[in-house]
Image (cartoon, rainbow, N blue to C red; front, side, top):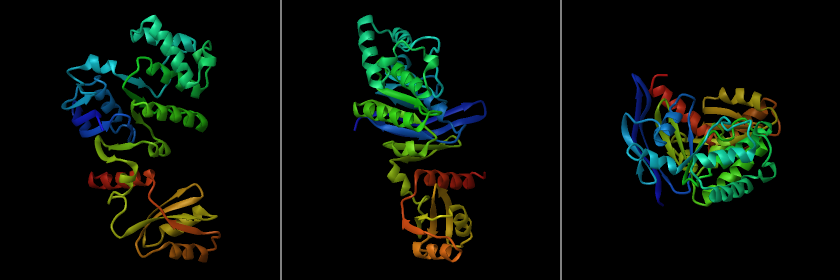
Length: 316
């Protein structure tokens, strides 16, 4: 696969503050790269270096074969950016916003008309062309923002929490659009705090305290030895009193970790403590309708375990 984004040892200091340290990764054309991490971990700084807005203290990055420092202006022509907060002109109509941004991107009138029509159909706002942006729902505002970021047909699209604050149906519809774009060859770099969205990405990176501590395809991350230690196994337990079950299971010496997922629990237990034994413990305490099965850890399990481990090694 052709590499479209390459970062090598990206580092950024602001005075004595280490915002990003030695971050490296490669992203192929058409990939959806999910970039996760706690607030303040360095996600935004990495994106700004990739977009040519911040000059790295050390290290380098290339987008579509162009150096982000030496070829900044050309890089900007090949990327689109969609921010977390709606940043278009709320007093303009849907079409007026598209016209304005198309002019900023330097599209000639014929090309602009073609792109506006095509993108309004793509994101599903063609019947809202004359609607004032301020009156759009959160989901339709994000559709409009996505359309504006695509006007100049960028090869790479950066999306900063594109579904934050919108309802689950609108989230699903935005992701359907992102899948379509990736299928057409656009490379997507997405930041998100939603673990179900991270599961949809073809590759995921997790940054913690300025360092990229994990990167790979979701299934690869779920198999990391830090997440599934030797001699341990993950189980899912479904029962009718999950909060009571959580307390009981956390008190067992062979249970390493336990957390609730809706009506089920994810349990990391030492091998030898099979599901039937865990079921028996809960049934003895009066918990009914108990079922267990081995499972792979979720990405939330992955990032919790990685964060705990690195917090321990970094001393907090």
